[in-house]
Length: 255
Image (tube, rainbow, N blue to C red; front, side, top):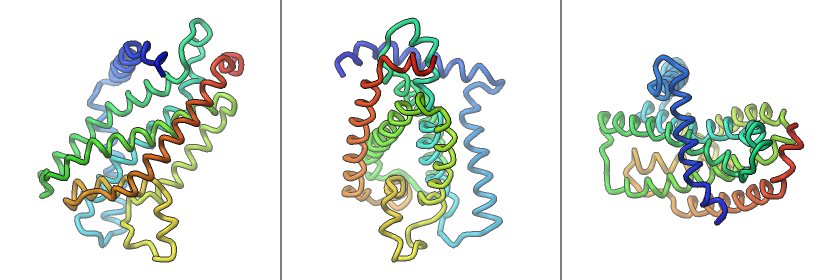
């Protein structure tokens, strides 16, 4: 870990450079970071909120909170899976700790998430959900979720160079998990017999925690968040160990 601190400046610079390069690839620049997820959310709102209907009160804010939180998780995993394998041109020429590549990706996608989350807050304030003292829990929610994201992103980044097609499997798994993460529905709709299994999905607990703070003006379920935090830290330890174990093998495997 102390070795990683020596590369903090590089990580921050590369994150900034990637954001600049991504915004330069479109005419809208960084505004595309806002328009793209807004169009994504709009489609799901039309389908699930208007066409199919829904009995949940304040369904638009309910849906947007879930989609915003989910997109942060999904984009990091989708983009982060190939970060080590995709850095072949660098790893062949100079030594860098491989763990920095998924870290850069997470920071890049997190920066874009902060833009969207800020707009979400404004939307909620306009629609009758003002900030309360419970907003003090938001930094804790951010910390828990980013550690959860890091655990899975590091794991995928460690394995995908050996099994490149795993990226496509992950996309399909994420789609399946998406519909079982409480983005569209509250736990009240889930039959009591299946509710225990429903809450085994950590994203359910994370999304509900955001809704408790932003919409219902209550504190998160601290016990659930603690469990997610412990699970995330275990995942980070395991996945970081895997990356370090294969540190010098990756350039050969991807060659």
